[in-house]
Image (tube, rainbow, N blue to C red; front, side):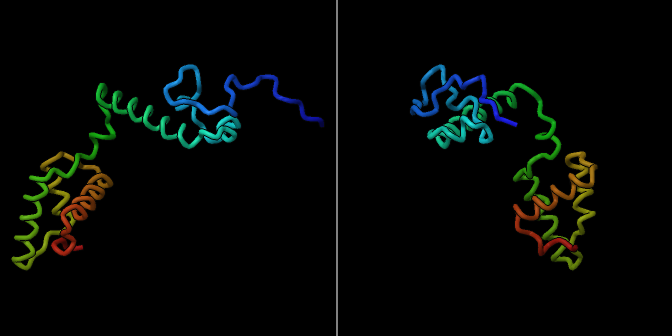
Length: 139
């Protein structure tokens, strides 16, 4: 079986350098490391940087205009509430009865209404790392 050349050629000349602000090029718009054009292009590294900037701007715009459930599902460890929880865990530990992960999960449920076990475990792990309090929690 004989190979036939591609009938459709790229609209872009990949042998010429591209200026980041030039119009009508694929620079930063169509980056894909698997395409032949991007593999041959000598500006692919800079194109990736520009592509990332363009996509980050698009993502921020969409996130600001729409409600993103994946961002809301696990609330950030708020500094004031995290500090209160840390003080409570410290009080329990000093009394000789350190808090358990289950008690932390109950406090989390009361504060943020998160009942999903996976989410609770992930949040507790993140809280322990942020406040460096693994020694205050009974495993």
